Picture 1 (cartoon, rainbow, N blue to C red):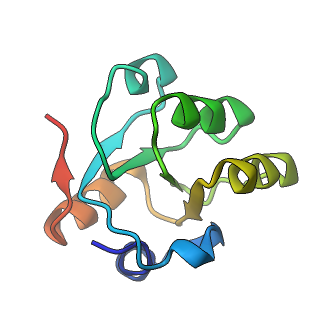
Picture 2 (picture 1 turned 45 degrees about the horizontal axis):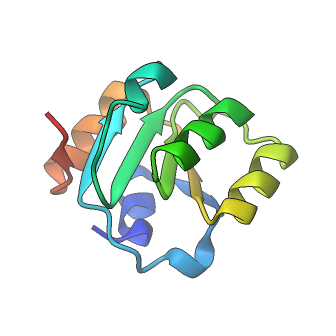
Picture 3 (picture 1 turned 120 degrees about the horizontal axis):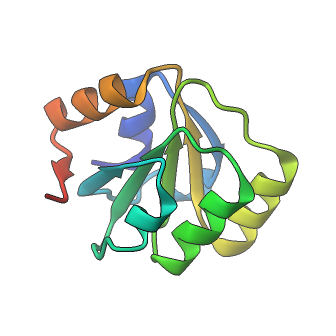
Length: 114
């Protein structure tokens, strides 16, 4: 599924990474525990989280995750956006809960890690 399709399915807002609208995402992982995120090893992964801080961006960098979805309309700070842009990480936010966003993406064809 392409990044722009993810935004469409979830009524999401692309915060940064618009030049990556056609990038493919095949799998998703939902967690607010960044220690769990560090254990995941998968290409073209979408991280779904409600934890909106710089640590989330840094964890994505360490895990080679190129796309983060913030649920529950979490605000992305200017510092988070700047860091994500520097690292080439796409940021999306949506109004849905983590459970609902995960379900909608699964129904649309995104595969789970486990």
